[in-house]
Length: 252
Length: 313
Ligand SMILES: Nc1ncnc2c1ncn2[C@@H]1O[C@H](COP(=O)(O)OP(=O)(O)O)[C@@H](O)[C@H]1O
Ligand SMILES: [Mg+2]
Image (cartoon, rainbow over all chains, first blue to last red; front, side, top):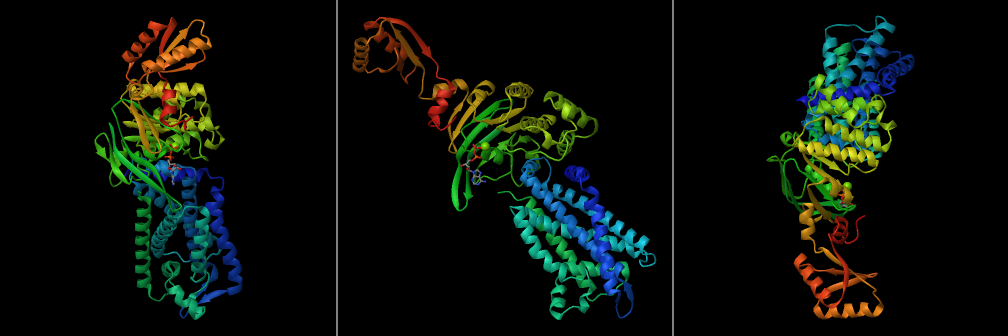
């Protein structure tokens, strides 16, 4: 599948050449982490569960990583719109490569960037807040979930971007879907302390699944229904892939 | 090399159907340049997009080098390189990066890729701009870059949708020359244009399309033969006054000759061909003294205007 390599190369050159390359990809996530982590951290203090107390900055670390996964996916989707706008998307449809491989190249690049961001954020917390983040073999499992999460968000958001005709439409749909998802998730605070109605909604929120799985592996934070969340996220990822691939290969 | 049979395509524009292609068939032999000539909205880009696998026809078939395009077949797409009508460049990337990315999608790498880039940047005068961003180029140079991309690769078929739009005449001449060279080396080329003189100068075969229908097709010679606008006989008379003119007209009317006057020149037309024209000449020359005569071939322009009903440029 030579299309994958070419597609990764294309994404890389585009991202490298962007004038906001450092801000978009590294500083922004760290900034989010720092502002929310420290500010909310001061207000909230530590997150206490039945068995342990976790400094807020480490609790929020996983949430911030998830936010960066989504931001990354949105950056990629915006590029897809630009491609459509400047006619490149149509031209790419004529290239002698499998169209799914173009999608896979974009996906792989997005996942790599997400992993770099996640590592940068983990190192940031590790260095600036010594002793608050324990490193163990579980970090590798955590990174595996970052990978899967990055895939899921990239694929579903790219699917939406491919479906919609205008960037305006995309922005609207994005905010309509993402805002409730964000605030009914466990990104900022544990769902346990929230109103019952939000608790119920959060059960079916893939963003909560991903965050809870991540905290389980990175912080040893117990979570209910772990295996359901894992299965749910995997199914969500597969469905997103099928949708995005079908859209990429749409021909009519 | 390219076979198109009975293509139909209807767009749905805000609930209103627009029939863009109404049964288009054509065929291009290997190494030939076919010019698809038609006014704005004729359906040229629609045909190009179907052949480029961007949109799907409603019915009809097409194949290139014996391969029909079905289910996104890559084998088909390996045969083509396409210049779409709308610009398609990475505007924020340099000329060099644009060429590299394109080459990589076509499987070029390393030395071969760099050699191909060198070749086309020299051909299209892009060398001084290698490190400039595409958005900094003028419209004409952007077009060159877009065309240059397709000259990097060696697909059997080259499809260009109005490539000369916005190009200055000198570059246009170069492009024509390069296209000829490509065709001579065996590449088959489909090019669309609204400009008759381009089709006339460049193409082995011309297809005139209007309103989604092919109005005429063939070589320039065949086209001239096909059209009802045949050769014209022009006769010049000495001292042609009103009375003489009337007399000639009346005489021709009696003999059933189709004539009209343009100033002091009599124009005689006859669909039946050159012998019929000459017979008409003999009849007129029997009665009136003809100073000089000439036979004119219809220009493609005359024909185009006739075929598209004056709708073209
Ligand atoms: N995406 C589209 N939706 C609706 N109508 C279209 C679309 N694309 C082209 N058309 C219409 O189809 C006809 C043929 O267009 P096109 O193939 O672009 O012609 P040309 O390239 O010869 O100018 C025109 O009437 C045009 O308005
Ligand atoms: Mg067009």
